[in-house]
Length: 238
Image (cartoon, rainbow, N blue to C red; front, side, top):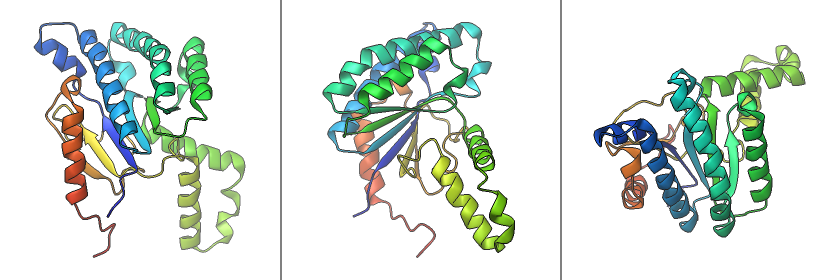
């Protein structure tokens, strides 16, 4: 039976969910936090090792400043309130993305939450903050260059060089603790990856749902997981 080790979710539809109810987009983001909590607790209860959630992308800075400010404040409140949930459910928290551009207070809170949950041995929740796959890959190549790992590649055969570069990128990915994605879910009806985990999703099983994220339930997640186990994953073989 195939394994399900790593689920990734593009959490789309918070703003539209709120607007459909005649409310401000920020109301949808608040409701989305509640969904994150339930989905995370569910994955922890099912002994799924890794859950990666797309919270804020490198492109989301293009949104209205008022909404960006609200999201940063909401993230701060989320981390403070969820620490108890992480500890009660043995969940490790890991932030991925370039958090160096976030405000120092928020960076400190992120690092503190990671430190306080580092010894938890259940689910690892990876929260993508100021994350973009192109940015991630560019940072990987920069680290390889700075470390001098690219210097000796000219002496190798082309296939060996390519293999070495691939292994180097793999070892520097933000998600190196989690490995490749098995199951990618996007809520909200759109059918695109939106610069999310492009390397890690090379052989992910993709599921699209029209459900807006605040309405995405553990029941629907369970149904998607059941469909996942019915698929045959060949990884290029037969």
